[in-house]
Image (cartoon, rainbow, N blue to C red; front, side, top):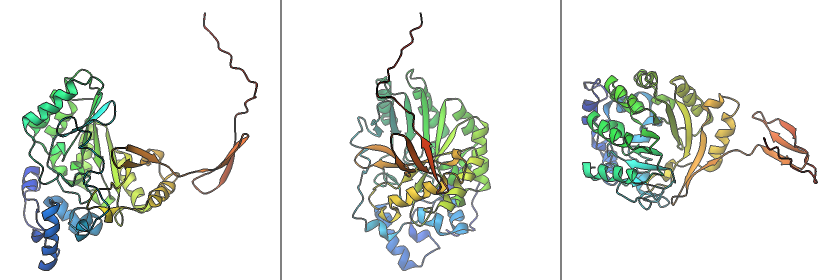
Length: 367
């Protein structure tokens, strides 16, 4: 597909239908390279919608590497097929119940782009289509487990469902008395902003409290179309957070993430997670060392608003769940004081509370 090929860029369905699905359709590489990349796409399918492909051509490798196949994907001997053990903790198809009070519910097998670092590379692109019965089975499970307070819809990308189908799913979950909030995980506002129509926004607004967990990795993803889409959602009162995957050679420098997080706050999106890339088969070339992430977190604190500083987390392999990692600012401590290092490297002494060894606790009882 040529970058300047005429396509109705106002209609998200047209853009999605005209997506690039084979390296042979790329004008970026000669035939012999695209042939090698096709062997990768045969194992891990590709999809790039025309809007995001044009943005890749405008901005270069930081976006291209996220979505264009790489022969390194077939050389990975470290990664796992299902690194987070989602399938193991799945009591019914496409639903993962790991944490006591919340579940992950996969309701879509469509994305606006297929990220090459995707945790669900094993499913995206050739996943068996989800039927009404599959969805009903998941909703039945939620209805029969009163400990579930929080439902996270993911996929694929739930926002790429047709309006009627998304409305049907949300309504079914919303009517369950013990479900307190619904979250939707989506990359759509950043890669296919045309989908965020006034009708979709009104649809989502009906199901408050509903939260959007968005996905942005690089400031070059942010365009006027993206800003308008996110403004529409924010104006509707829909809270938005963002997760960013730390990717080697793409966004693994503090100055890049500072730019991104500032732009997100301007769009009323709270940076929430900086995710260490998962141990997914075919993604080892994206992964950084943990020291890289910790060093970035040290650079963020004090140099941008605390609202723009996300949690740096590892989603532990084997289903261990998310664990936050933080730089160690404690230099030393004893019974009398603690010495800490601030964001500029300065050392400060902070006195400890003095507690007598024979201190007693007095309890006041209101009469």
